[in-house]
Structures are given as C-alpha cells and as structure tokens.
Amino acid sequence: MTALETLLQHRSIRKYKQDPVPEDILNSILEAGSRAATTGNMQVYSIVVTRDQEIKNQLLPCHFGQKMIAEAPVVLTFCADFNRFNQWCNQRNAEPGYDNFLSFMTAAIDALLVAQNCVVAAEHFGLGTVYLGTTTYMADKIIDVLKLPKGVIPITTVTIGYPAETPGLTDRLPMRAVVHYETYNEFDAATIDALYAEKENSDEYKKFVTDSQVDNLAQVFTQKRYSKKDNVAFSKSLLSVLQKQGFMNND
Amino acid sequence: MTALETLLQHRSIRKYKQDPVPEDILNSILEAGSRAATTGNMQVYSIVVTRDQEIKNQLLPCHFGQKMIAEAPVVLTFCADFNRFNQWCNQRNAEPGYDNFLSFMTAAIDALLVAQNCVVAAEHFGLGTVYLGTTTYMADKIIDVLKLPKGVIPITTVTIGYPAETPGLTDRLPMRAVVHYETYNEFDAATIDALYAEKENSDEYKKFVTDSQVDNLAQVFTQKRYSKKDNVAFSKSLLSVLQKQGFMNND
Image (cartoon, rainbow over all chains, first blue to last red; front, side, top):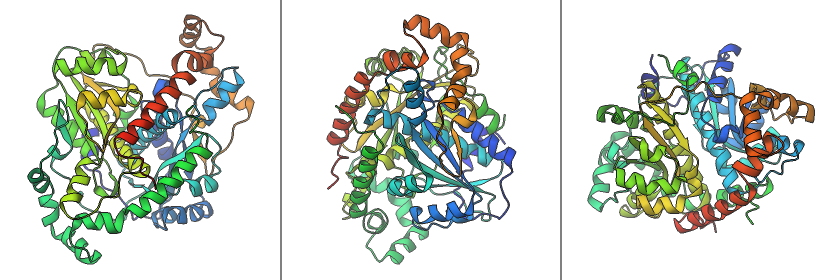
C-alpha cells in the first residue's frame, strides 16, 4: 500500500486484540518517528513506551479511564523534551536558553510530528491507533506516573495494537471549511450553515444530540464534551505544569 | 513505495524547480491532511495555501528571508483555528468556551498532525518539503499578512515543490536518546557524552563549530542559532499573540 493510501484509510481504533506488537515492528515504528523533521535537528522530544500492565493501570485514571490505555499492548506518550538537550549544553559549558514558552512550543511541535509519523508507520504494519487528547488535560498526573523530569511535558498519547474493530471512515467537513487560498477568507453565516449541514443532518449526529439531551450538535460540544468550565480548569493546570517544568521564564 | 519507505526517506528540501504543483496533486495532499486524527472531530485547524508571488514576498521577511518562501511554488501555513468552530457555536445558541490556553493547545495539535500528513503525502508524489520554525517566532506578522482573524494562530509553515537538490539523510541521535521504556530514564553524564559523540566527531559538525567561532557544537546552538535572548523575545511576542487572538482567558 502506498503512503497516500495509508493516509486516506486512517481510522481511530479503540478496540484491540490481545496479540502483542512484535519488537521489530515497534522498533520500525519508532525509527520512522525519528525521521520526522525536527527543529534545527535538536530532536527536542522523547517517546515513553509503556507496555507494563501495572504502569498502564496507573496511566488509566490520567486518561479518564479510557480503556484503550489498559487494553492496548503499547502506549506511547510523546513529550516535549529539552531535558536531554539542556543536560548536553550544561556539560559543554554552553548556557541553555530554553526555559521559555517559545522553546516549549518548539519541543511540542517536534513531538507531534514524530507522533504522526509513528501513527502512519503503525498503520503501514496493519496496526490500529488512537490519539488521546487527555494528555494535555492531565499532564501533571502523567508527569508523576512516567517520572518526567524538569524540561519534559507530555503532549499527546497514542495507543497501538492489532484492531479488533473495523469502523468506517469518520466524516469530515467539506475541504473548503479548512482550506483557505492566498489569505484567510472569513465565512458568512450562510456558508457556516452550509459547511455543517451534512454533519447536522446525519442520523449518527442526530442521535448524539438526542442522547445528550441538548438542542443541537454544537451544544453537545459546548455543554457536554468540551465545556468552558473544564477547559478553564485544564488551562490553569497546564500553565502551572509549564511553570513547574521550567518553560515559563519569559523575561 | 510503501508508507514506511516514504517516512524513512524523508529529507528537508530547500531548493525547488520552477514547475508548479498540479492542482489535482495539491488537492490530494490537502485531502490526505484532512484525514489526520482531530480532537473530537472538531477540525480546529486551517491551512492557508499561498501561491501568489506578491503574498509570498510579503511572507518572506516573516520567515527571516529564507528564500524557500519566495521560491517554492506552494507555501502552506498550518493554523490553530477555533474561529470557524466558534462561529458555528454562536449561530447555534451554544456558548463556545474555547478562548483559553488548553483550547489553543488542542487546536495546535490538530494543525500539526494535519501538517505532517501533508508532508508525507507530498513526498508520496515525489515533491520536496521543508518546515519553517520561524512561524511561531513571527506569528504576529504572519497574522497580518494572511489576515488571520481572532481565534486563529499560525503554528508551522511548509513549503512544497519539486526538488532541485538531493541531500543525504540527516543524522539522528541513537534511538535510546529519544525512546524511554515504561517510565523516563534519566541520563548520567557519561551517557550524554556517548549519545552525542558521533555527532560531535563528524566533519560536518566540526566545520559548523569552526565557522561559528565557538568552542563546541552545543555553543553553536546556545550562542548562534537559538539564543536565550531571541527565545525570550519570541516567547513574549507569541504569548501576546495568544492574548490578542483570544486564547488567554483562563479564569
């Protein structure tokens, strides 16, 4: 299968067979990850590979009990990581200036490009994957479980295993919702309605609205799935993680 | 070529032929981007496709004059974007709670997974790409040029074109520098020395040190390429962009 075919067939897989991921395949996935572009070739990221059931069980509440964490044979936590680079600089009489917000973003970008390469490589091998957005919500707890030192912040988590489900492709908005030509083109109200019409009229999402006991699909997001109250609480927590891990010395 | 082969053969390409990228290939690249995982299927990102020479010339100083911006036939700016989603919520009597730091990170993650998919897809088609880290440094200026509204922040930029150079694979640290098993394993000083030995002893990097007139490779980074002074200035600027674009209401 070509790279394009692999990309176009992506599904999030949340149910896995018990089969382990062979060591050589895992190593190929990680190597493919390491070939992603990295800022100045600094490689300011790290990947924590967790397969031990006890540690996966400790991670489980950090991810709100999403059972993929306990059930998948492999859990990969992708981290923004200036720890190793800073240590190298310190051993070379070179004063690192990477304890600031810009450096955090640089390292987070590195981590995310690596993560996506690992996902594509895993799918190349017939494995299923899913991203867990809970990583940034509960970064403080994940830091404790994975013993992440100063300079390291978990950015995203991917679980990997052989698929035990075969979901269809997820719907997407029309491409003109996400692609702008030359400069940004603001949408008028009628265009927004048109972009979301197919989604709002689908039986799958209508059931979502009914089950959530709200008036419409947008309210499922704002009231149930990603509420302001939660987002504000997680924002405060994540910003204090940046402080604690040494990325907020911006003066 | 398989997805794994495409990933393992990645090179950053900074010199391009004049040939344009055919419309159908560009559309396939963007579609492959849109298949990347996205938080809650919200698709809180956007891609600005810039091909107009005049606008590329305006972007050029935002990227410190790196000539790929002016010379590549296609410039893609990947943005964290809650603007469209917020607009939809507002039209549905659903109060969006996405004006905070957590939501910025959610949207940045979406944008970066899409970006990496686009890079892999471009390389599938024989195109060359390079990421420009300058995007986060100069986000304020890029916002002006690309007319990005509130709720939108540029995260990374990729230039695309047919390669006019054939560089070798870039060196990487040994895998044990970036992969940790079960939990994080801190490095002792001798291990850091070992991890960086091959890089520090290579002729390419020795020339880098001589040309930079510093004592060692780490100092090339701390004194020349990514200095504390620059990082602090860009951090301040990026944090004020987050404020201005409406992602710092964390109370």
